[in-house]
Image 1 (cartoon, helix red, strand yellow):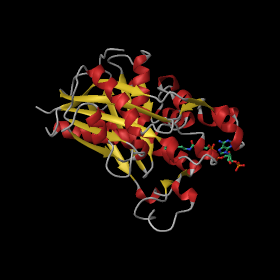
Image 2: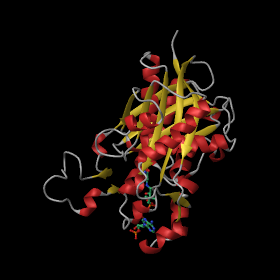
Image 3: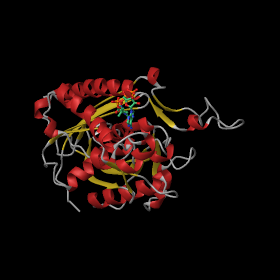
Image 4: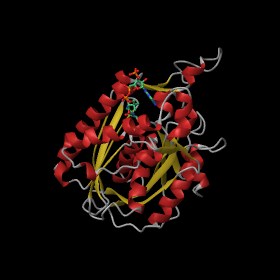
Length: 333
Ligand code: UT7
């Protein structure tokens, strides 16, 4: 019998410090009104110096394990663009701190699509019987990459983590993930990037220009790609699932910009009130955004058990991906 990955627990973690639009806008020639109307963002959370991505990942992972009613899994994946260090990966640290020394653990790198890539990877590992239970975490401290003088990115991104536990199960049971659709186009590598610090522009030798160490994004162009790719990928996955867009109860798209989410919903003819959105509170948290949105919507009771969810993400690479599932009955803490 074929095995599916079934969602059985969810959790999230935000650093304590909320940063308002006003706090950021003052020095940038920006304004609360501009940020709200162009992005839907009202605040975001920034981790303090000394708080690393693994700290947030552990917080989210603990809650997801508790929600699933288990203390261990046999694989830990961390989707992140902001690992604790360039080497080694962050996932083994997270696994050890969650009491799982000895457990297989590695990072998934697909920027804002990382969590959907991580889900697909975990689902593949479960159906191939490499693992029975996988913890998939999306965790970021994106504030560490931001140029505080670049208003086109400094006001958009925030820090946080979200996590789910997947277990092997029946493809027809609630919580079963899939089908999936994944894609990439490396011709767009410069549209979302950090130039220095890798093998192309090395940090050894001469110091790179300060700006080259920061995250940059060609916002307008990325906006267009994001709408086009998330819409296309969502259509593909709906066709694979043999679901109509009208049947979707909750559209959980990557929280990049509320206008992007609404464009995607409109193109798919999904009513806007079916969009799960927490961007107002947390901003764009990259790989953490979908699991954070899922956990908060679950905690608020927005996700109806048995409801049909469409997840879709877009990010640097360029990368994109989608998945569907039916929301399972889960305890709320
Ligand atoms: O998570 C990965 C995927 N990321 C995304 O999908 C993000 C996609 N892009 C976006 O969400 C939007 O492009 C942004 C929110 C980043 C920017 O919004 P926009 O409506 O595309 O603005 P723009 O870049 O076209 O800039 C319009 C104007 C410019 O001024 P001029 O040239 O018209 O005088 C910018 O300098 O707005 C200016 N601007 C700002 N003004 C006040 C850009 N950022 C700001 C700001 N405050 N924070």
